[in-house]
Length: 190
Image (cartoon, rainbow, N blue to C red; front, top):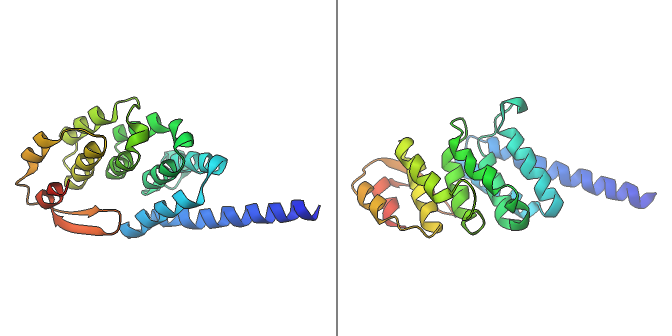
């Protein structure tokens, strides 16, 4: 009986810790959203990873009552650390690119960090990213989409040529910090 109580207490503490990290996916500071997503990747393993991915997808729906802007980042980071679990979510994740209310630059980033897993997803992530580059005029989305295409092993020379003169200032998370630079300068890093 003591062992059951300890296990229940540990599980409760783990849930509290994960919930506290998820709260940062809502934070107005974009860097904190990226860091929270990375923390979730480290905290969630196995069945817990599956549960939290489902929870984050739910946080993207209207039914949740509280849209979570950073949910795609959390889903992707958990997926990166749990490829077997993410295998069952990869199609749904790529399909988020069609959801206008979702922060699609975070979906593009997520596709980039899970490229090895989502490469064979349906819809095809490379085709979907190219389609959305034409549709979504946000330069930050386009930068993450180009980066993700490169991570997928795609030749993006046509797109780099197309955007090589873009003077728009954007923020781009490089895995360590958020860079503030002209679109053309960020794209040249790929």
